Image (cartoon, rainbow, N blue to C red; front, side, top):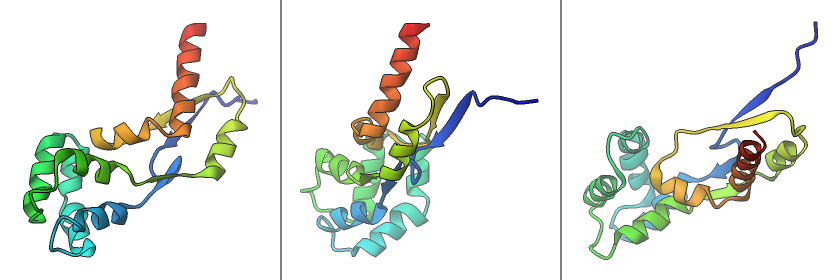
Length: 142
């Protein structure tokens, strides 16, 4: 018996978009005496980012801890940190083409374990705008 596909679930990171954490580390290195590789180790290998992504600490606390751990200069304001942290995403053109080819009656679901600061940048990306617009349209139709 034929079962029709009702939904497709997409992960955000490294599926819908590409990202590079080293871009964050290079940006933060401009405010620290540490090299980007050491900043990467501190944030991503020691579990600090996981604490933030899981909601154990909020954005301001994360900023404070990162500033302390990388011995950042006082010039690193929260707004600078948020921009450096969030501006790491690039489109994955191939997946955008694939998504556009999916029949409209098939529901597209987005899953992600992203954090608050990344979301501020993510929601501006065209692929996410398309997801949000489609969801809003489906809600209007129901």
